[in-house]
Amino acid sequence: MHRRIEHITQVLDKHKAEAIEAFDLRDKDYFVEYVIIASSLGSRHTEALLDHLRREIKPDEKFLFVDESDEWIVIDLGDILIHIMTPEYRVKYDMERFLSDLAKKVK
Image 1 (tube, rainbow, N blue to C red):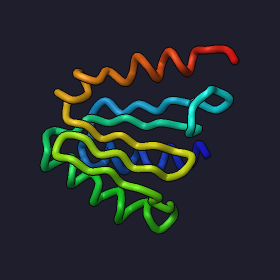
Image 2 (image 1 turned 90 degrees about the vertical axis):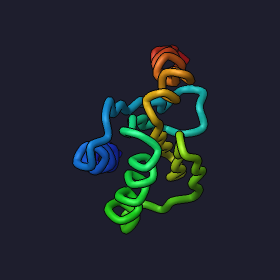
Image 3 (image 1 turned 135 degrees about the vertical axis):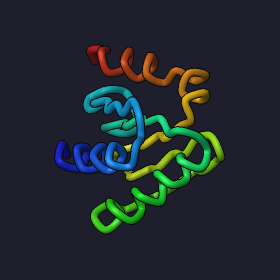
Image 4 (image 1 turned 90 degrees about the horizontal axis):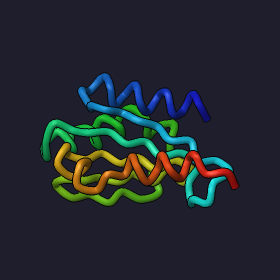
């Protein structure tokens, strides 16, 4: 699993995603084991990051669902959820706080 997370974050980093964070939610009351959040440089960059992930990780990963908008893309890999957001949406929805709190909870 850690190899998969590392590969995804390396692809995002290589293509200029910013503030990449991975949250380990195993054994927590959440529907996936890991969540990765990354900021794009803007709407077009958000779409470009999705294209890079499709080319570079899709041979090894099964994309179960992709929800796309100009400001936020969510990629569901089953046990990993990837959020790519513009900086404005990342600040607005502040998912880091929610996920950090969830990751700290003792079950």
